[in-house]
Length: 329
Ligand SMILES: [Mn+2]
Image (tube, rainbow, N blue to C red; front, side):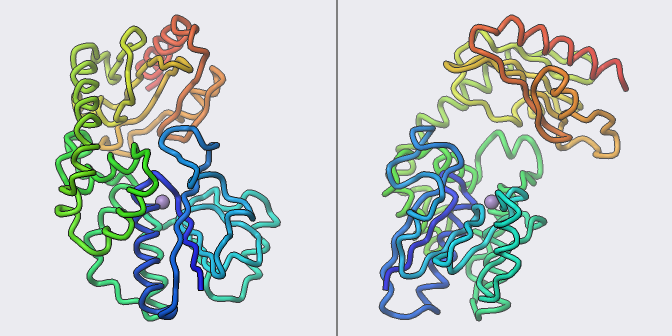
C-alpha cells in the first residue's frame, strides 16, 4: 500500500511534521507500507528552492492509496485521509471549512493556536491513536520555537549557533528534494546535533552562513538608531536575504525597525516592532501604516513592495514612516 506524505516544503516545521507522521505511520499503519513524499508550496514552482517534487496542493498531488497532508492548507477531497494544520489561512473557501467540519474520520486536525504543526500533530496522534512521542521532544521543542519565532533573544536568532537553527537555515534554502527527504527520515532518528554534521548539510550551510554574516556586517555598518527606530537604507548594496531579527540584535533597545532593500525583482520597505520589546507599549498598527503606502501585513510587522527602479521612492516612504513612528507616540 502506498502512503503519500505531503508537507509544507522548505520549512523546518513542515519537514518535522512529515518526519513525525512517518514515524507514526511506520509503527501504527501496517507493515506493507510504501512511503512517498511530496513538497507543498504556496508560490508556483521555480520560486526559491522548489523542484519538480514540490508545488501547489491540488487533487493531482493525492497519489497514495492513503494520503496525508501536514502543515499545509486543507483540500476538500475524499482521498485526503489524514490532515494536520495550524495556519490561520487553512481554509481557502467556506466550502473547504464545511467539508472539514463535517468530517467524521477522526483523522483530520486543525488548531490555529498551536505554535507548531509538529507539536500539535504529535499530541493529537498520542491522544487519539496511541503514538508514543517522548523520544521526539527535542525536535518538537525546536519546531515550536522556530515556527512561532519564540527565540529567547535576537542574538539566538541571528547567531544561528544551535544545530536546530542551522538546520532551519539549510532547510529554507535547500534546492534538493532528495536531500530534504533524507532529512525528514533522519529528523526522528538522530539528535539534531548529529544530523547537522552530515556532510551534505554542512557543505550546503557553509555559503549560506557566509552570506548571512556578510549581510549582518553590512547592516551593522550602515544602520542608524533614530529615536526609537532602527533605520537602514540598503538599496545600493546587493543583499541576498536578510534575517529579520538582525536590527534588534544590533540595537536591542530599539522599538521598531524600518529597512529598505532592493533585490533583482523589487524595492521593499520592511517595517516591524521589536519582538523582544514589551507588547503593552505597542501603539502603532504596522499593517495600517503600511496600507497608507499601498502595502500591508500584520499588526506587528508589515511591508511595502515597489518596482525595482522605485528605490528612491522606497527610501522616501521609509523616511516618512520613521518620522511617523517617532512622532505619533
Ligand atoms: Mn507550521
